[in-house]
Image (cartoon, rainbow, N blue to C red; front, side):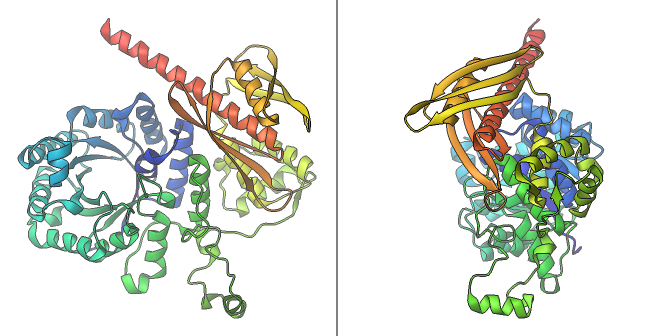
Length: 519
């Protein structure tokens, strides 16, 4: 049996389900490219039947990704599998992942069926998926609570039908490591054709045991782990990719397993996903948390100063954390910026030098000195705002102070029209700015959440604003970045407004297709 563990990332499918607002195609593609560079073997990028937007994002990613295998989810239904196959057929290599619940409670209460019906559906789904690809994964949803006789039987049947990967999910995070390891071992002992497929595991973290269950599973024969960046996902989240990767790397002498993960990309990928998904990483999070490599205890500090491995079992550099330098100012030329980005590990096609340098000069004029983390923030901000903007912010003038009503005057360009100006009052300068933006765009947007955070350190840090807003019952995430919090707030709202415009355009196309079919 091989010692290579396949890393199956489901950040863009299971992880996205937990977000307050859906990601745009561009945002998903940005994450997919980062996952490819991280070295994931397979990335599950969506559920194509769920919406036209998800179909488009799966198809777009499938066209672009070359070094990782792209996968899409489908229930054990013909229409789901057809949608996945159509979305993925543009890829050089792809996988269809079909799933049906197998536990008694799910079969009886959710599906309103019996196990024989489920068995038949599973076999038919796998056979149909094989019409599109010979790489078919089958998941026994809630396998952790499925009677072992039924689990062994359905695994045997779907392998016979053509499934090449069998996923054993602990869907509700219920099992203990000893129980979960026992399930994997029993499958190897009792399923006669088990050697014809790779056994995968997909563990949730409801009781905080997703990583432990996954590691125990590979010790008992599983060779694929399904996980997400920062452990994001339904409820308490999924098995954390960065924790799995560093456990297998740090304890290789004990466990004996390897992966294709480039650990030096972990920190950057974690930060990218956190920012795009508006999901902050807790400070004490293993591997990527702000405190993961900090030491407060005097005894610990003394030990680290004498020898870092007294209290550090891995180095910050091993997962991609770098020290920040103060060597960039408005006098720094384009070649200096390009060289610094190369030192930080970026490739030329990871950013647009013209856009980055223009943003850098604007920031350097405001801050004086620019840090590495500033550059990386600018790259990220430019990436997610690289789509054509229907609403473009040109200027903000704000009048605010103690005892006076805050007033904001906004200048915008909308579509191909000339610049438009609108003013509004509000409960403070940020609210006044939002009111002016909504007035000029004629959009009634409800603010659900507003978060201001610092990107960097000290008084010169960039202000990052994340907002979650609702328009016509749909949630949208907006992000703004600036040294001025009013300006960063405005950018975040404009980001939301552009999301709304694109969502409207997708809905128009959807309606045209429906009308066309009816005709």
